[in-house]
Length: 460
Image (cartoon, rainbow, N blue to C red; front, side, top):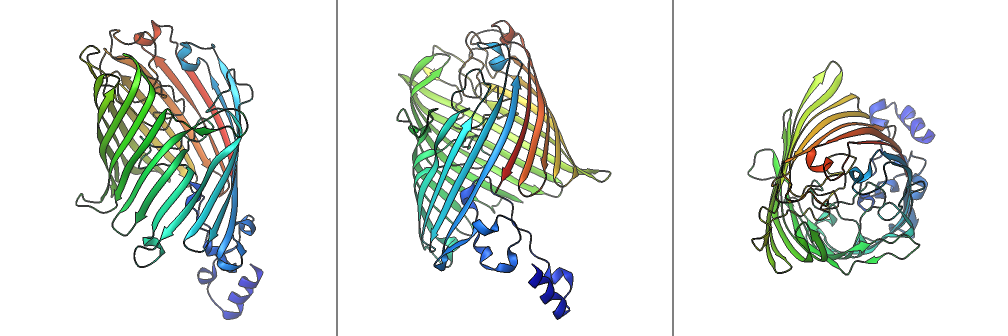
């Protein structure tokens, strides 16, 4: 840094020309990070740059190390609305993730990540809250040139890996509550200027609480194709198109348990123009559940408008979701929408309700007093799509006694969230969710619920 400043001074160059480029932010999926830019010593300024690019001979053979330490406190006044469960639960969620990323030239790469997740103070500490020590990710990438430049290479990935597609309504790493979701299997993909495509065949990782005992979940299979086209005939919009296949030999819905084979075909339109932004998604699901046919559908929107309040940036948004329910439990066809592998915090950080048999509308207001600080206030109003089906939790479990009970209205959720990216490494997040339950839940023992959380993470 001193040598760079001296060189600029001797050359009589302006400060802008000699300014050191800011390092990129850390990625949500850590394996997407690329530290080859650190081959240039002038771009090194972060204290962790010393372990981000460790040459192992030639410049394109190198090792990169990194990780995350996160501590999160959560408190529910009535977990699962108290149906069933303890009346209150407050606990700490501890997580450490450490990874090594080895690049052997432009065509071969290995990524290995270990995780340690604990839940001290929690009444029932099971996955996904606790996993004492295990392999979070371990895969090998092989890149085959498919055109001019490394960016056009086709990718073959084999092993344990995290996956997240689109807005993560259907496929997410489930960053909350504690143990991130991963899959064991094979993934093939490629990207060009006009399209990105991924095809995969996997099994979800079956989490177990002890050390190094996680394994593929042989009761479930997950496969599909996901394509993103960044520029389309839709003005200022990109489009996602996908097919996702899912099999679960231990599925459970309000009509009973059985083997589920669900195929999801859908699309998403997303973009921004001027002060407006939008993210709209629709899908159809078909297949079988036990001896029954399966036909379900879902639709979600997130639309926002940006404006200024004095010196603050602001966004007024509105989300809406409809996930079909089983309108007739005796017609030999299951109509309940299945969310596959969504964020558990689907509507808010409390993560109490899911998108099966649901209709909701959620206005929100986001304020940014400064670029690194974000405050969000939202109020979610939820109904059942049909009263013949149950109210479902975020893990797609039907709440006993709610199927067939009159009254579509399920309740409301008022949420306040504060997120502060203190610097490149430190992020602090906290907030409050108040859930006001309707009669359909109160008559089966459900209670109004308050959820409080505070999280601090250090990424390197």
